[in-house]
Image (cartoon, rainbow, N blue to C red; front, side, top):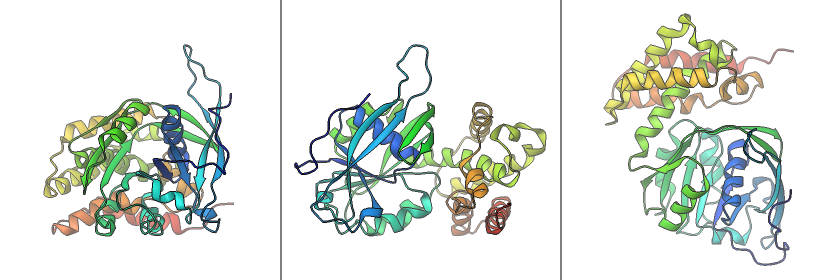
Length: 327
């Protein structure tokens, strides 16, 4: 069925929230916000040459998870899509960045001089690090961070299917806080979401899961469930040991046992899945290793520590990524 009818592209349209990075997660969040009645649109880097007053419209398709007690028909809907030169960028109150971690700075740099000084930025990606590099460039804007465990699969360029439910957490990092109306709107629109007072520990917890699962599945070319085998017990333990020590020097106290239980719980729940890093390596794409295990190494170095296991894993992934794909 078709979503709410969109106005003509020549009619004025105020978009409060824009998403940059219309991959699987970006389209999932876009659907959830649109379904909740929020004024959401997309920013398309590929139409940067479009006239400044032009607004395109993008048709998207969302496929919900199969359910016995809910309508699982695909939903078609339309949202405004702005180029990098669109004057509508000045109207945006919240920019949600859903690009890969290593793309954040390059993706947002052309926008910073075009967004309103009051526009709030929300980073929603795997790994850590971009928040530290972005902060000096904000020119007084507010920055929030987020993490989500929702599962979503991209079936075509503009069609995604939700594959799993999970916790989504947001929290303030620096600068002016996100206004309460937008904050409430996000939490109402995204199922099982919460605003937390301290977002950094939550990101470290998610980092632990990614640091243990993503590179090992890529290196061993296996689904997540394989990591439950005894042969991986020691290296997972070493990854977590180093992470907990480094986080403590960053004034983030983590429960080591809780982290291990969480890692193995994710391995169990996603046993048949292939991690994003596995897929990136398999398709010869850049990985987020520098923002996952590499971030642990960077923070260790900042405190005069070493994280040899995470460093070895980083190097192994880089070497694997540098090899030519098999034919």
